[in-house]
Length: 570
Image 1: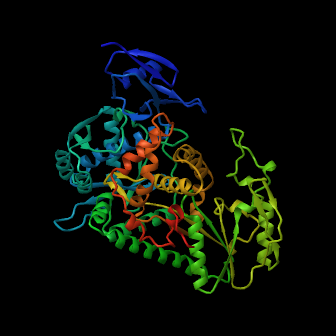
Image 2 (image 1 turned 30 degrees about the horizontal axis):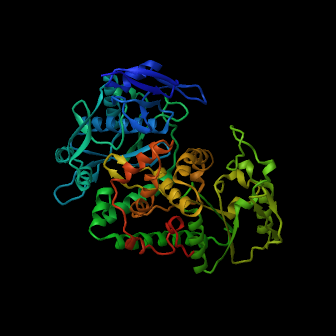
Image 3 (image 1 turned 45 degrees about the horizontal axis):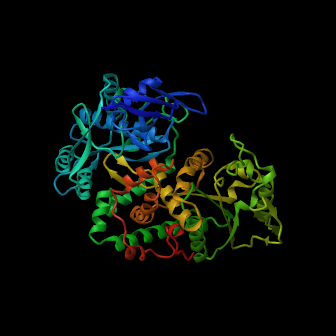
């Protein structure tokens, strides 16, 4: 056979290779590292895009391709690392705690929350095994040993029926049930020595790539720490976030109460005709949660005059503020709303980011003095004028809108900086009640493959922006990294400042979002820079049963999800 031409996008060169050469062999031509274009830091190669599709380095090339190698500085490289690290941990658990079950439950600010379960007897649920510090130390020691042994990760395609039996033997019933529900003849599994598991995306070449990790006790389980985004040689800094952890634990408990512990049990519920019942149950629970927030405000209404609501993109802040306001009205309070967006500085005064573009997300983009004066005036009982920001002209307009806070009034304001004390440092903080809203899903694909809260929110945003803002799915995908950078800088560090954390996630929403998002993702062309992300999301959605139009019609018009799919009456 003739040689094959491979274009390496990292160095812009074309390489003539023998058919069947692996990506790993080709990577040696660029020294086995990739350089971050912004920082100049070199990262070991972990995987590659082949014609915009993510592949392991063991991938054989028989045809001409465009190849881009990636490291931990790329989000997909980071995902490869985290999947592989989960496998490494799984292998250690099987060695140190034989007969126990590892569950990687949800994200934490400092890593992934994990629990060890003891399998229940027949017809009994598994119970949490409270892990000791000695057991955690033993897990770390085994993981370090396996890193030093540099064990290759090997992918193999086998009969799905055989894989299901392997997972049952490995005490992974949800993984077995999930694969069974897909109705596939073959499936891919991974080997790490004698350990076998499945993951929903590529792994790194070997355990030797996983030098940076740590395990820390957390609650009844522990936190699996992975490399920091700023320095892959150090673990992500630990941050104590007890309120966030409690909110996630509450949602996990709710999942167990409903019997929907993972995607397999969710699919089973939907296929069994239980969608409408689940929708009604989820909405009733969420209404109680909104009522509880209003009760907290009412209990201290003599002190609390201002409610700030913050949260990341597509967390449902707008709907949450409206529903909290509705619950406040039921209690006899009179909510008034001021949009924080009206307090931007004029565009000519807006700071610019490192690329020279206007930075509308930084705190300095807001007229903090005017905002502070407005709130202090309202708290004194003054009548103040509220501006309207004209986004087209890039300046505030004064149109005579005046406001006074009467005795039963409560002011509600929503914006990304609402939890940052630096936003209104001169306002009496005791008069402010802060709410943090986010879609904190604890639903997992299976025992050791959790679902990203960020993915959930991106799908929400994709559906909403396509339907109501004229943005293509490509726009949403390509703009998402910038959104995430803003969240990491301006929102997530202040989560614990909230008086209450509200989880806007609903158990049925991924089946709902699949119905709307899947057709949009399939339209993205293979030549698009958004194609690899579209493929990843489509592969993820393949595991989820979609709602039907008649089931979607049962979603009430006051649901937070109506903010994204339409039909909301708030």
